[in-house]
Length: 236
Image 1 (cartoon, rainbow, N blue to C red):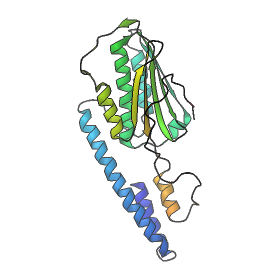
Image 2: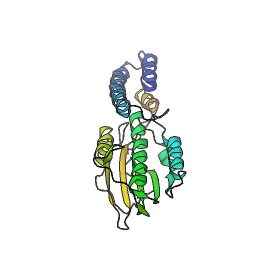
Image 3: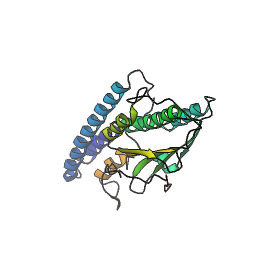
Image 4: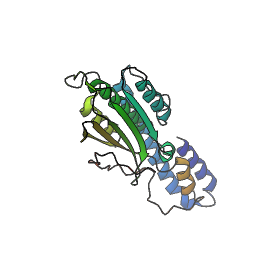
């Protein structure tokens, strides 16, 4: 909405001095409005699916809640621990609210499954940006010290199928599988906002020179479907 308002003001400023630029600005306003409506619909669907589960106060900035989530996981006294690593680039990346909520849910479900299936395991959660402009969430855990209870059909959570559907609904991808050392890995990719709506408004008004980088406000949504199971990653 900030971008829509900024572009409307820009159109009002330049409509007499540069009337040829008003048309593109109005087109951007229409595009931003449609994108905002789509985002709101996805967020409403996410909130309905969550039901009585905890929701984030600022889903577009999920990292503080991730810190609490990982800390709580390590404080249960059953031998299972987790550590969280978030790069600076990941913290600066913009996320749509429904994407941030999905990021939180992926980590939450992954850690729930660690406790359910791998009691006493050590988990690592890594959040970083890939070189193809995606947010990547890695969750890896060592093998269990003692075997946990295996529910059928993913009871007590989304299950892997439901979690993958949740991620794909916001334009991401998710894959998971056993590690060679007896542990388990899960990798999810999410689209990020490449530039603020205000920057887009200024550029449309001719106030900022267009960048040489890829066009568009959003990163590519075609995330890789078969990431490396050894959890190697390039921190950005």
